[in-house]
Image 1 (cartoon, rainbow, N blue to C red):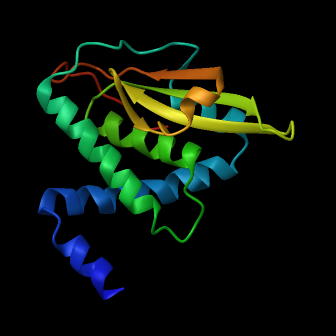
Image 2: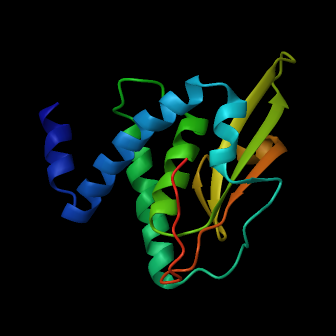
Length: 160
């Protein structure tokens, strides 16, 4: 335990803040997941619309990679289940707060025994933010694109 605390404290201050933000949003996303999907779907973005695979600035790429790391770190220490969909929803919210577009994918596949499996992953630009490890094994059955107003556009984004 002491080793983990030391590892956390050795992180740069900005990363420690991101880990805490990720931890809180993983909890919020877990609550969202417990609700009927029809109720949370409108907050995930526009159904069956993908955001562009291009157009990220260097600073956004760094931000996206840091968010990905923070979600991965925080999800290991939650007191609740923080798997693919929870991580994708939390990541989408973290990117939205920074006005970075993202696309949440949902996929299904069958395992060797023939049982249905599901997976969710999040992409921003060409970068996979969460869920990259097994995404290639799944057939996409749902897509939600979260477009964000351009920085400085004056448009207000309301949380749902």
